[in-house]
Image (cartoon, rainbow, N blue to C red; front, side, top):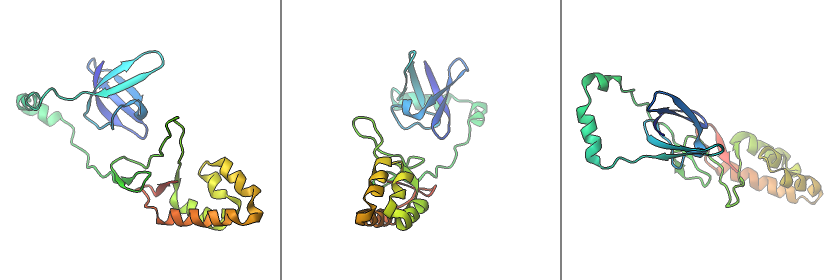
Amino acid sequence: MIGKIVKISDDKVFIGLEDGSLTEARKEDCAFIPEIGNKVEIFQNNTTLLIHKLEPQNKQDESEKEATMTKAETKMQPAAAPAININISDIGKVDSSPVAQPSTTASGFDTRAVVNKTVYCLLAFFLGTLGIQKFYAGKTGSGILCIVFCWTSIPTIIGLVDCLRGVFQKADVNGNIVV
């Protein structure tokens, strides 16, 4: 099936198909960074949905199509929304993705978590001895180890280091960081 991306929400992509129907997919199903207006090809079976971006055959095909559009078709085209998507990736560099995304290992497990910067730093500073910031970030095993070894003051040092790392990490537009 061939279609065009017509809407993108937090984690979903809506694709208008040639027959006028609408298909909903997850962003993870896309083999590219989806943008409104992208022409896509959809492959689907009972369990898997894959979406691939269609590239124009050449620049001439695209310019011919634009040249043949009537004034009425031009007016019907939706106005482009201003692109203000400047966020950070998990390594702190500027990225064009809408929100900070945690990285994954080769096995597919998330190794990092997206957390609110202010909450994480306050938990790490005030309750770092008990490893509460680890629980907040979804790292339950590390949090339990901090509780078990809290009498050694090693978790206190880890909490202060986590706090400093969080303070000096740039937040995305939502105030989140990747830890």
